[in-house]
Image (cartoon, rainbow, N blue to C red; front, side):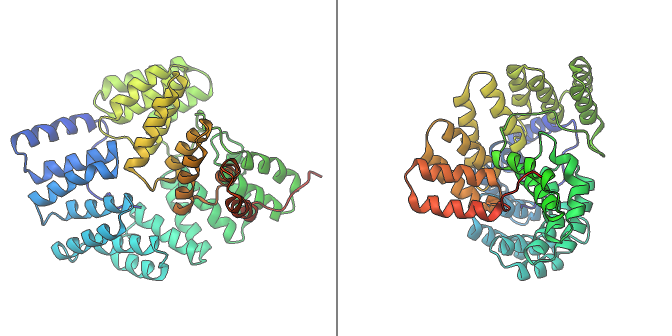
Length: 418
């Protein structure tokens, strides 16, 4: 959970900003702001590790730049370099002792180390959660969950989900908070319909099943459990409409759900004409192409977007497009590059592990899954089921016993339909 607190580039101007940064660097290769802009863009496209030299160059050019120091520290944390992150936070504290990110980043480190009481104290000193900064609010909710304050976590997460309706991770966390707070009826009311959608994560489906079980409704729970433990196919689906979505995304989703791809194309073509330099529009164009059965067209659009950013959702869709275009090895390479850039991204680790398993590379799959489990992804029943199979395929008897036990812990007792 990084900081990423520098001003965002306006929607529709990402490619223009990239060109401007390149021109500034050509005119002044030691220009701190241009180096920082390049560092941020390299991080978005290639991941944490590739961006670190650019952050170092930006700091060397302007050692007192608090934004550069804070983003450098956050990037080190995203790359799993806790000790280096701590040293960078100390440098930030020396340069800008009153900067609230000093305490926020220390809180992130403490939470990752399991020191939740310390994390809470540091987060409170930062004041960032109280000011409504989403990353800090999410950290506050995670700390509350870890400390058993599920009701408080749910209150915070409800606010965040309302702000970010497309954020599946937040929805899963909210369902978990409501379940842990002993509110199974609220879980069912908020998420039963979503659990029926193809896009629902196995974890969300499992939580809804457990909520039904607590309410005594085994007939509703049983088919959901079958889905949860069957895992996700990883295939893209047209996402459901949600409140507060940006109008272009909502329009494209509505057209896709209705099977009206000509309307979807009309919308994205109009947006492209209006915002030709927008990476967001390029992603939306790729999404429509992929859903309309044109994986190569999708890859072309995703490649334009990837000039300025390649977050995990984009990488995942591009990997699927490669598979659909008949190039599974390219998909595997893309996933491996993403994991190299973001070694703690659990979803990317699992996706690459599944590709390795499909090719029979069970030892590699096991290593990737172990790292994902260490990054707190061990609540996913489909992940644990795959890790159990990896143990069996590699003849790891001790691992087989361990992961069978872990799977049993997250699995509710067997249900029968009545």
